[in-house]
Amino acid sequence: KQWMLSVRAVAMRDGDGGGDGATPGDGDDDKQQKVNPYLYHLYAVLVHTGGVSAGHYYAFIRPTTSKHWFRFDDERITKSSFKDAVVANYGGPYQSRFGNVLGTGRDRVANAYMLVYVRAGDEADLMAPVPPAAIPEHIVERFEIERNEEARRRKEQAEAHLYMNVGVIRAVDCGRNLAKGIDCVRWDSKRLGTTFRVKKTATMLDLKRDVAARFDVPLSRFRFWTWCKRKNGTVRLDTIVPAERHSEPLDRFRFDNINNAYATEKRLFMEELDATESVTPMCELRAREAERTERA
Image 1 (tube, rainbow, N blue to C red):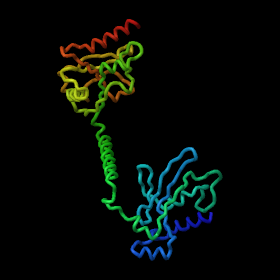
Image 2 (tube, rainbow, N blue to C red):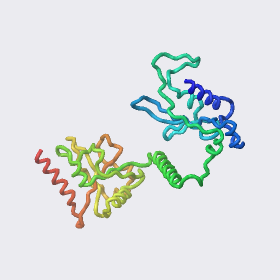
Image 3 (cartoon, helix red, strand yellow):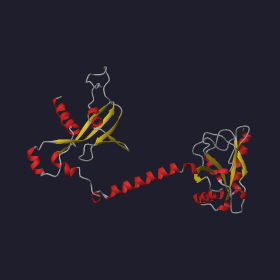
Image 4 (cartoon, helix red, strand yellow):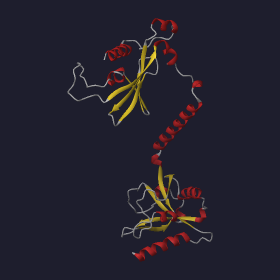
């Protein structure tokens, strides 16, 4: 207890004594250490909040020789105060502003579990700004990657209203997602086909070019079909997307009449043709549907 009071007295003097809580570094360090070689100042408080089985870790750090504290909590860095960094992390029961304990069984959930001190004579060197040349190259590269990733995410969020998702379903996807009964696909499956993120102002031809590049199929070797939900609740192919509609913007195109939990993704069927322009994949798909219908 005496040690805690001594540490608290030194810390409070550093934070509330009117100064910056640090010894200036423009004097002779050796001479200063000889005067008081055991004087240390508090620069960081590592905190655990929660209980024995679960909790969260964060830190309060004074990154310079000034008295300003900052809270480092995952990716968030916010300016803090000496009270929040030190006084509020002693554990024990909550106390009122007059010093008396408030109620019983109300212990603080935040407790400091590690304190970082810097010797007064070493503050000027240890807390000095780090020159860019002293930062390892791999750390600089990592920071650059993170900045670029954050910029990309912010750009996507800002431009989200300009894009739409189009799911392209192939015959092979129908085989992997055979539904119960007579449906050819499980329409409510989250992983159905391949999703393409395209601009709403893009045309059907632009989408076909993206699909052709993704699956390495010539434009002349496949065509799109729309889907429809029939009165009996089954999902079937509806109509072929004609060539004259390839110049139509995607946000004006009616993909299907199906309302489902994944309505934010519009879906098309990709029918792949053979070298003689016959529709063998489609024939095989319809044959499988006919067989299931007969068995039902």
